[in-house]
Length: 93
Image 1: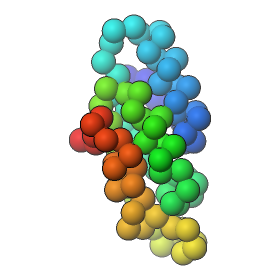
Image 2 (image 1 turned 180 degrees about the vertical axis):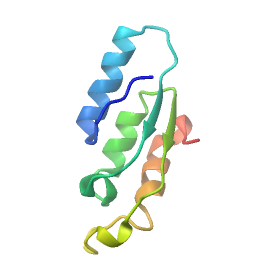
Image 3 (image 1 turned 135 degrees about the vertical axis):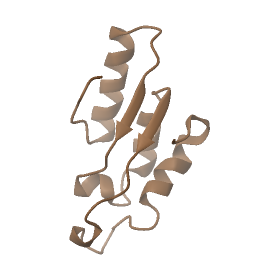
Image 4 (image 1 turned 90 degrees about the horizontal axis):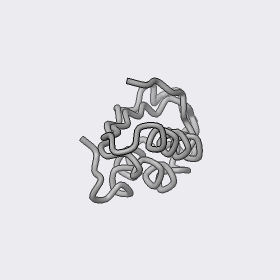
């Protein structure tokens, strides 16, 4: 198990690529907890999905403290589902 604070699509992508390079042939599972306001808004859903597709499997936790996200741009209803849709066949467990 490797713990990383990647919270932006670029950081997620590069972390997963580095793990693939370090552990060739290993199955890599990503556990993503969208905690920052940026990842909980409807801004980077497609980019997050594209980055997470590099993993063999993905777990995405539920949003927390939605009342603390400014209403404008909040991903309350479509955030997690938007990322899930973008993952396509990789899917979210």
